[in-house]
Amino acid sequence: MTGPSSLQHIDPLHAELAEAQRLIGIQDERIIAGLRKGIDTTEAENKAADMRDALESIKTRGRKR
Image 1 (cartoon, rainbow, N blue to C red):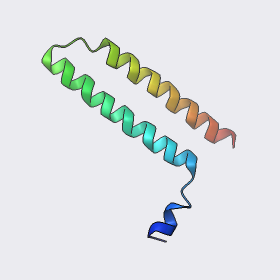
Image 2: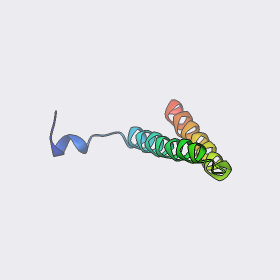
Image 3: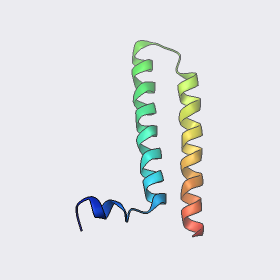
Image 4: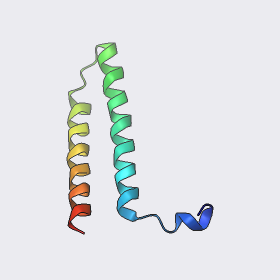
């Protein structure tokens, strides 16, 4: 099924997982760019770790369903 009506059937958990993974990818790109420029990326790395923890929490919620 394709088209706008198929979007209504997306599992909210999968959508949340996809968004978390997208944001982690963006954060990773920022960390790599900062490291290449010699910038301290500690704060960005901490945020990425927090996002990964949140992602694991989301996955755990999905397994408990």
